[in-house]
Length: 46
Image 1 (cartoon, rainbow, N blue to C red):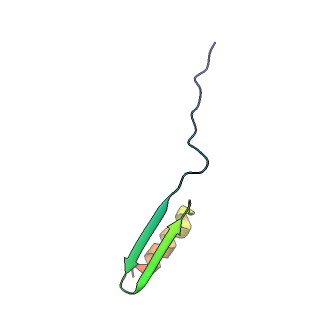
Image 2 (image 1 turned 60 degrees about the vertical axis):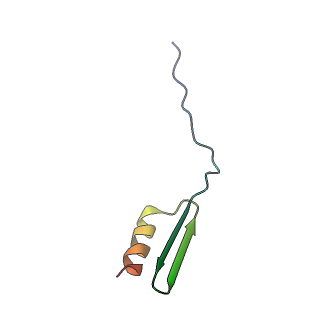
Image 3 (image 1 turned 90 degrees about the vertical axis):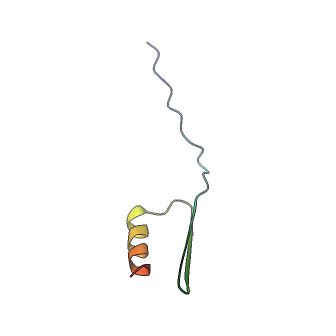
């Protein structure tokens, strides 16, 4: 029996998040840990 092939995205996907709030500027590239990103954004947006 033939099994379907799993297609995986390229390992080198580029991602960037940029946030500006007042004088604060935050730029995150790559694949940030979701929990860390949530904590950083919560603190920045208080």
